[in-house]
Image (tube, rainbow, N blue to C red; front, side):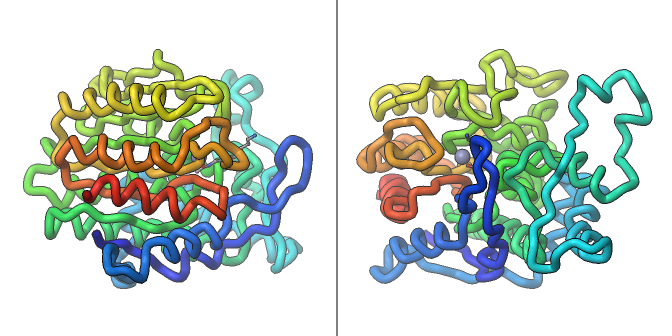
Length: 353
Ligand code: Q9C
Ligand code: ZN
């Protein structure tokens, strides 16, 4: 299996985030990519390939994200430094447009003109600081996803996008949860465009990250050509989305499927729910499958509370293989550096063998 990479994915390196009221070291680090790459390379099972630098990433990102959001991400750090921000520092939001203070007032729902206002408007939490290198890595991460998607559309072969920052929490016009561009959504739109019949090219997105992919759900919520299936922790971050009742709206009704699971979920229960999600996808019969691949479901993950073991990842890979679809795996979460490489490798090997 080909594994796509781009060294620019490792430039974004915020020093800290704020968790439970404490300043802690940022969990979503470049070392995550390094550990996975070390586990995949060396014995010829996986072929590491550089993403194509000639891809016009912004053009493809515009199929998913609003132009004002993209322009904000591109320009925010420079504007902040012009206003006196620390060129070595990180731009954090200070307020958010909570619906309870904005919804009744037309002007309160518009993009604010000030940078501080925009920084809250285009973000929903404190886990997406913007540094000098952030936008370069955001573009690189989507480039990796697009390069791997192109491999599927050209050869029909499954591929792995080894990229960061991750994407599934990023919505049309909002960053959050370490995510800025929704790499999986950008790849899905690309695959549909590249196919002969873009309106009938069904795509299934299977999200097995520990957290609910609120961004991916939002982007495709009214779209019957993309089925979203997510397994995630019921009572954990991002807290406000991911219930079973969220089933899509308008033409997308019935094409969004959430499987919220309790804290402490173990291998057997997880695979049982995964088989239900896979059954939904089998009935949809997509042209392509995209997997939002997070291994923050592992028992020793520092921010997840499931209890999966390494053996379970082999089983997950095998269950996904049962769909027999050209499959694009895109990295999302997974924060235990000592096990992330082995767990990703075990899952991909379960899929290919
Ligand atoms: N108490 C991904 O896995 N903070 N994002 C969580 C938990 C943000 C996770 C706080 C977690 C984002 C891609
Ligand atoms: Zn996650």
